[in-house]
Length: 116
Length: 110
Image (cartoon, rainbow over all chains, first blue to last red; front, side):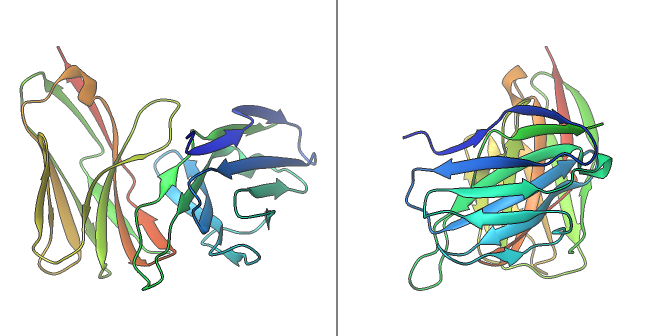
């Protein structure tokens, strides 16, 4: 049981390049999330997927797209990377119970992205 | 987004000392959470609080959900070197609405 895994761990891009960050969870969770973490800002939600087949914008969605490929996988895509997207990106997953209750969010180890 | 003010920003303490940090918000939350993050890792949940006034312990850690639902504190007693890390509070209003504080960086001097 690996929990939440993310690839790659590190990435350097040039401005304008594109890339996809991968996330997978093996806990059978229905909800998945992408956050970015910047110095002094805490974690901010980019996009989330409440269930397979649905995605919604979070607090800072501009410049990103997401795909909920299946229940296990949730990818984040930067179509044209900008220096302002230099950050550490975390994926998380959570189970939403049928009565609406939740467990906590479990986080992956992060992807450190630098855009030059 | 919701603004959570966490203080202090950083702490340098001697091993064995107690630690106290807090988080305040202008908004009401249904759940307060405290996470710890170590270098190169994602945040890991320490304590979850679900009711106003709730006081919960997890080993040497104690956290409280403020009566107003707009604040929470975390205490660590008898700190040890492995307590080093960044501690984040987070407030949750709904299943998909989790807002993080800016973090408290804790350094424990042996």
